[in-house]
Length: 184
Image 1 (cartoon, helix red, strand yellow):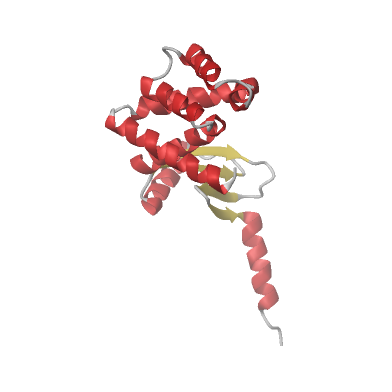
Image 2 (cartoon, helix red, strand yellow; image 1 turned 45 degrees about the vertical axis):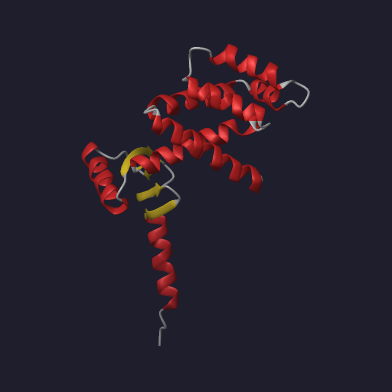
């Protein structure tokens, strides 16, 4: 996505987000956008039609109305029509992603993933989530998974940050420290 599309995507997502707040429809709009994103992923033909320059705006609106009639909030349907009018229907999935990020920021929620060599117990998972929530100030949606290739330890990804406490990384750090020690 180019710089112009990125700015437009953020602008459209903010506008829809504000409309959802004003209409007290944040959850419904977020769910609608998830459904629309899913439809565009499972049917690439839909996005091809929406992006096609020879298909009229009216035909694109009719198609979206037919697909989503009664399944999305009017504010979402009107928003989709606006994107079609502005020849921006190609950014629909990106707007949905930006909307989700705005919603997470608004609610102070964040995704995190913990990767370990062995499954974490429920108490370990709860303790990790609590620590991450204290550290970030956000409510954490924590996913855990096991990576059999790890020797031990834990790797945690929170947003765009990676905390690598794996045994392999700890051994590598120790090796680097030992190499720096001068032996006389």
